[in-house]
Image (cartoon, rainbow, N blue to C red):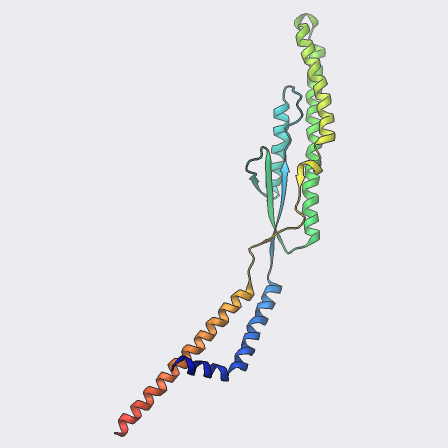
Length: 229
């Protein structure tokens, strides 16, 4: 069987083949529509280093602020990745099943509430450090502390007060948290492409069947002719 014969045979069955093609595409539509779609929720967190003011325990306080947030997120099964090229910036992400706006909002509120809660702790830690330093200053006898040391401690107390104001005004969810406008689809499966490939495979099988069937018929005819002789 040559190519022209194959095309003629297929042309005779074009209506049936077209119906079969529609069946494949219908299956693709149903699978595409009902397939469980995974979306990736993510948020970027930019952890502050504080103002330009310096005082003892400042670096430790801000490090605790960062670690406490990351620890809580890990407990909530978020994956965490440090953003390349940006100091103290992290991307957190997790999977969501289905593009549900309510689920997106819940995640957004969860992250925002955690940030607000730890911001309160950050202010509390600065306040506690202020109180401890102030008590130390009050309890030290004047004869055991130099005037320069006393001035330095008082300056640090003033810096701590200003640092709290910095935290109130500048460390906010608007400045330090970035959420996507919409969440991207993860592991996209194109069922139309899969069904198109399967349909081509089906056509190949049909053509192969026609060729083999025609060859068998020709061999049977030859065999019958030989037997008649």
